[in-house]
Length: 266
Image (cartoon, rainbow, N blue to C red; front, top):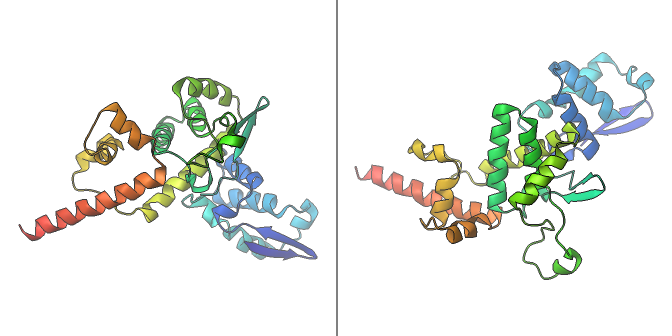
């Protein structure tokens, strides 16, 4: 966090994605929807984040303003937001709960489903796809969670993901402010961007690139010990996201070790 002193007024400015507040994230989301130059983007962000009167804002020396704008360069680089500043969404008096920070309580199945929608949205820019993406991640609280949470193996309060309820939520979330939907998109993107650093071998490019065309499917089958029956696949998909990635990382390490030893003996 950067501290800025303007006359007698002290202001705090975020220096990384995870320091953004909900209000600031939504403002950045709104800016991304506009066709702005980098200069205009950063100036508007500076004015919003300083939360000072316009009269005082225009008293900032141009060189100082230029320097302060440069501190927002992180906003136009890779998104690495892993803190969910929108843990709850309200729509028509209904409360929907989102993933925890870093998506620590998510299942692998939820992650892969959301990831496929993210890729589809990037290709099509279809707002309905983005609405369904949000509906995958934000769900109502489990019945009697205030009691169940003391006995549950997970701290995730959200109901299990079902296709029927997903369809109904998607229709509701289509009426959400697009700025909110894109804010959720930014959060998921940030978590996705953080994974290669934590699990480098899982995301390491393999020589058998044919496997990569099928997305997560080969990895799921791998963790299911090569089995493709519904029970084995469901066991993997319903497992905690990070538990699965730890397993995938170990298998990837073994895979690349095998490749290395094979080449050595050729």
